[in-house]
Length: 193
Image (cartoon, rainbow, N blue to C red; front, side):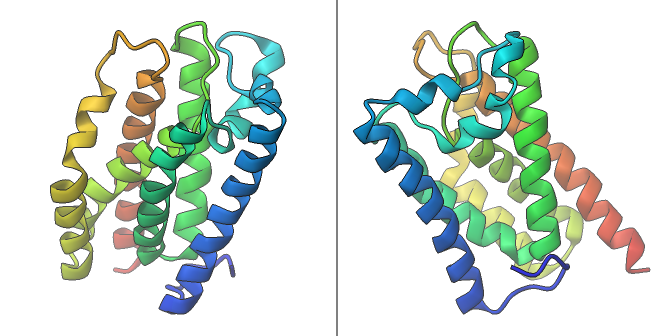
């Protein structure tokens, strides 16, 4: 994937998404056959030894059903994110992973936090806001589509009594996605004038 702000042809976008899914799936298979041994590299708030979890936790899942629940939205949102260009996709992805992970590390409950949902919620926040900020019909339609089809995700940012759900990753992912839209879409609009 060339790291410039070009929008890749659709077949290359699909190839990029398939590579991402292959990596997440490979980690899931290894984790499944090792009886979730890799989950020890998840994010454990306020534990210095688990800061690496900021980067590893998005690739780990608590169960096969957890993996299955994340893989389709990760694919759809990654494809939609690529409509903003490869450089923006890479920068926004890195920002969401680092910023949401750091916020969970600082403020999350003391439990292992794993899963791609922080990244998914970050993409969700970005895609909801970015289209309207870009003021381009195609991107506005993406924002509307994401809001209509996936709008129910917003309830996942609320505190939950289900201990195994990291609503903190959902919340901080969503917030960092909104911040990314404000920063990178505004920057693009200002630079094009």
